Amino acid sequence: MTKVTVFYSLNSPWTYLAWPRFRALVDRTGASPDYRPIRVAEAFKVSGGLPLAERPRQRQAYRMMELRRWREHLAMPLNLEPRFFPVDDRRAAGMVIALGQRGGDVAALSEALLRAVWAEERDIADPATLAVIAGEQGLAGEGLLAAAQEPAVIAAYDANTEIAITEGVFGVPTFAIGDELFWGQDRLDFVARALERQAPT
Image (tube, rainbow, N blue to C red; front, side, top):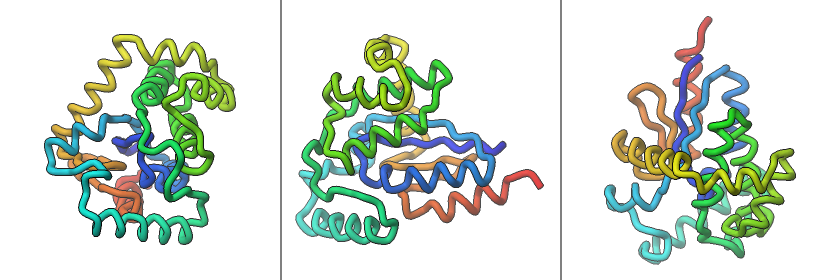
């Protein structure tokens, strides 16, 4: 199986738009995904990126155009200006990492959290909301919330971010296959080609 590392943020509309297609791609190619939530603000700092509120007016306006286009193209529900955005996703990321350390379905929980922000107007910074979302996935929400604060989980989150920066990641989602990086949900066709090229025959 070809390994593909996914560097992403649960705060990102582009990750949300990519997620169902990437999961379908994994199913089709038999790839082995390694899901790594990161502190994307740290990647911005070292690569010249800016938080949304600090970007020039023209770039902010174009972002909205692109979100509209992709929402319509993919026929996905997406609130252009969700009630809880930007949102502190550190606790949510910790839950995802903790679940991964326990061998759980990280992809499904991540998708539920992304959908909560971008389609359901839910606050993933709120512990009670996080517990409910986890419960909807058949998970022990309170246990995952507690695990999200464990030193090993926080260390893994920090390590994910450092690895991403070292490998040249500057935005999310970024998909890493071997020494190639593919940034953005609009690069999934290239991700597919890379995975299919390396798939066993």
